[in-house]
Amino acid sequence: MVRGGRFYTCTRPPHFQAYYRGQFDFTSDGVALDAATTAQVYAYLTRTEPLRACAHCFGGTNAMQPHRLLTRDELLRARR
Image (cartoon, one colour):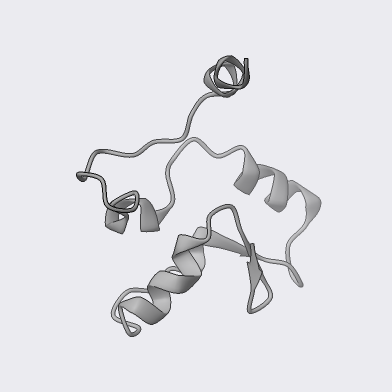
C-alpha cells in the first residue's frame, strides 16, 4: 500500500495513525519512496522483525496472538 508517499507492506499502519488519532506514530512501519534507495527498500521487504502496528492488530475479530513474519520457506509451503 502507498499512502502519503510511503510504501507499507500492510494496510494497517496508515489506518492506525488515524484510528489512534496520532497517539502512536506508525510511519516507521513504511519506507519513504522519495528518499529510499534500492537497498533500503530491499532491507524493508526482507526484514525479520514485525511492523510496530502488529502489536496493535487483532487480525480482524480474532483473539489477540503474538505476530511474526513468516520465513520464506513457510510462505512457499503455504502456497502449495
